[in-house]
Amino acid sequence: MQQTRRSQIIVNKSFEKSCTIWFAAPYSLSQDVIFPKGMLLNLVEHKDLDEPYRYEIYPIDSEGWAPYLISDTHRFDKNFRHSFNSYLTKAELEQYCEPVYQKAYPVPGELKFHLALQGCLFGTAVADAIGLPFEGLSSRRIKKFKINPLRHRFLFGRGMLSDDTEHTCVVAHALIASKGEKKLFSTALAWSLRWWFLGMPAGIGMATLRACLKLWLFIPVTKSGVFSAGNGPAMRTAILGAYTYDDENLRSSLVTLNTIITHTDPKATKGAKIVAEFTARNVQGVPLTNDNCLTELAAIIGDDEELHGLLSRAIESAKVGQSALEYCQENQQAKGVSGYIYHTLPVVVQIVLRHNDHYEQAICEAIACGGDTDTVAAIIGGIVGANVGKAGIPSDWIDNLKDWPRDKNYLRLLGEELAVVKWTGKTGRTQWMDPIRLLLRNAFFMIWVLAHGFRRLLPPY
Image (cartoon, rainbow, N blue to C red; front, side, top):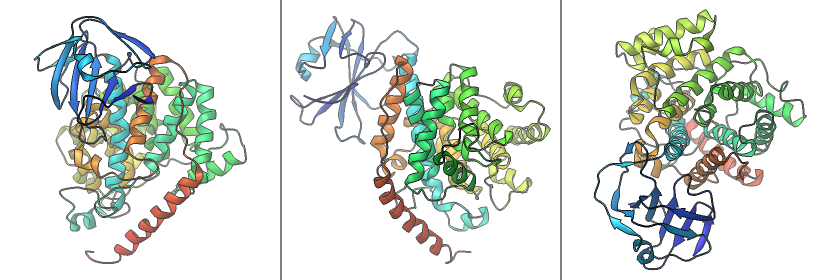
């Protein structure tokens, strides 16, 4: 047996290929667990893993849920005790089970939360990578590139991540290190941003650049931000909304701390809070709609008449089924969505209200608008991903996401660790990225960014 994580055992006997046993929450939290009679055991095939067969175990005392790709299902007919120090084969495990043939199975709230976290992380990353090659292009020129069907185009049909995903990971690290405690979160986030900055990331915004320099001068986090209403805070906030879905006060506090560390304009804070609220409501299973959106966001909007007007027009546009591109053309954004939060947020709201259940369609519309395509798509991807889960993201978009050192396995493990921190209330282990590896990766990344820049000098115009 090879133990790779507390929540995972690799079994490589009695199988033509190795089998991974995953213990869904809360059964992954102990090194010596007892699975009671009535638990469900599913043999699931996942083509995107190195070990294509795995058992997934979860209880049957919650709402109905239909797992996908099930090839075999059993239910425990007597108590089963398993220690991480013991060896287990398929035959031994099946001695405790009886076959069942239901088509829908219940899932506990903890597992739903884990699925939402994975959807949020992968939703952000995939949309960021899909949108990156079109950043800065007008909607008119993007249309001439004939991008549909949409796919990765950054590196020979493969996608790489920009700072939008990197910032989301930075926030996830801070949550893991602080378990959501406000003071610890600010400190952990500051250090995460410092180390990220040492890797010399490409495309860093001016406000974030200045804030990171201040952080390295050890200016307090309450004074490190600069007066800006850019998209930086909003692009890293969906994961905060997912993590704090059950605590509105904590969500508001953490989003504020996450914003002011780099951006101090109140508009940036309000925009980030609305992104977090949309995500949290998706995790709760009660998404915001055309009818209740303004009412539910009233506390965040406050007396900001400009924001109220922008959101009202976005909601009305969504109600009549207008495309995002048509909406942008009517609102002085025909050339593309800018990096200003009050330009980006209405487009995000307009698309999410119409396509909250359809990840691919939401991302296609976001990119067709042009402008800050990777950030707009990443924000929408995080929100919608929390609703549809990783299963709702096109598999080829995930398969062709190729990056290093933040690869798909890194994103998966990050989501798992974040879920365990939430379940246990204990600080977790963060997967820090050392600046040397980031420097190498970012140098390679910058070469391709420049290559895309030269490509844009060629037709179609």
